[in-house]
Picture 1 (tube, one colour):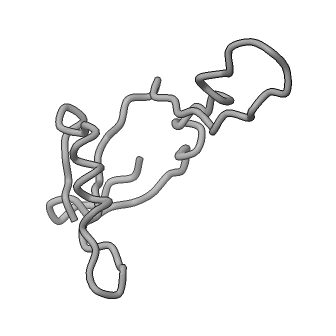
Picture 2: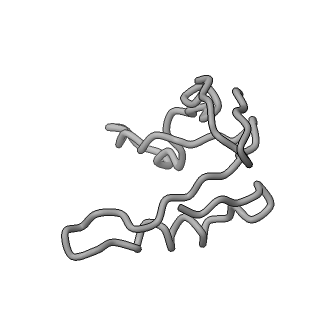
Length: 82
């Protein structure tokens, strides 16, 4: 497990984690980081049937809404809940 500050959570870190697999195609590296609350992702675009320029971005997904769960973790022999 790799724990990073939000400053170091860049695309290359996640690409490296995605490629760290063993022979059974199991993940060898998990990344735990604190992300910004305003980060969004986009769903794949749906091809439109008419004329004109195709859409570049699909539907917006606000990632903070997907991870709005409270968990407890042991941090330096104490328990924190966030």
